[in-house]
Length: 394
Ligand SMILES: Cc1cc2nc3c(=O)[nH]c(=O)nc-3n(C[C@H](O)[C@H](O)[C@H](O)COP(=O)(O)O)c2cc1C
Ligand SMILES: [Fe+2]
Ligand SMILES: [Fe+2]
Image (cartoon, rainbow, N blue to C red; front, side):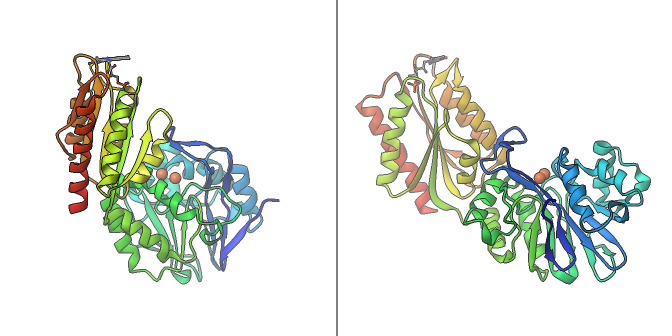
């Protein structure tokens, strides 16, 4: 029998641990696996399941629920978010709980139909602030749109001060230890990496949700991935900084190189940054994990991109990383671009234009021909000084 944990009186963790999953949404690495947290709330009159698990883990979920109540006695299935990692088990649970109604935001109800064929007559749409009385347990629904999809809401249990925030403030971390306090310092760094990949494009929504949550008497923060927080203020403060700043005087240098010319320029540039007192982290895109780059960009003031020219444009590894940056929209807006080419050039102008298109202020780029000579290395150090001046003055 798998373990069910009562995280608060009559609130049970009935989720699944996906120890072996190594990639999420086909782009985000999961070195520690993940969890799909689902919670059973047992009131005196009614029983609610808050979120479900990914497809393939239905048996685990139903077996865990069965240790507490008969699945057919569930009255409500709260779907905070329609993404299949949380809602994939809804068809099985709806079948196992024939009298249960699916509770979701108005858009969530539409999506339950679109994604899981849940008929409208089995759904109940709720609005921001609306409550559901289970008998001694009151669930309140809070609109938290775009964290992660437009339909996303959070569910708050008033009596216990427990917030089920779904993806928001989650982390990809598989562990039998359910609480953040017990996972050996991984909770906050993994939540940051998660924030970078999932929430960073929606930072203003995250700020709004944090303001909303701030007004609650929060004592337990239970997201749907990774650790549950018994001391929510720690993760809330971290999220606040990620969503609002301040940024750090840090430069993230990403580059690719085929024959070492761009790499040599990069070394001179990094020397210049360090000499000027800027914290620097660097990523060779042929081996780097994009999620680590994005996590560093959550609080870095500057991005520096190095690329050789490749068929008239940037190296494909660089194009891909730059596209990801433009999609996820980190807050630091200072950038520099450098690289080597053989004849036409073109890498740095392409990267500069793409970064400018999403609001970066790109310093005058450095593009050299062939292998770097003394004056090229001096130009790289000069570019580094300009970057450092910009970010240290902020
Ligand atoms: C596959 C390939 C495509 C290239 N395409 C171009 C090009 O379109 N225009 C250009 O100026 N240089 C082009 N080059 C030359 C490189 O940009 C040049 O060798 C540069 O110095 C490589 O920098 P690296 O040593 O950092 O890889 C190409 C080189 C390779 C290997
Ligand atoms: Fe999601
Ligand atoms: Fe998720």
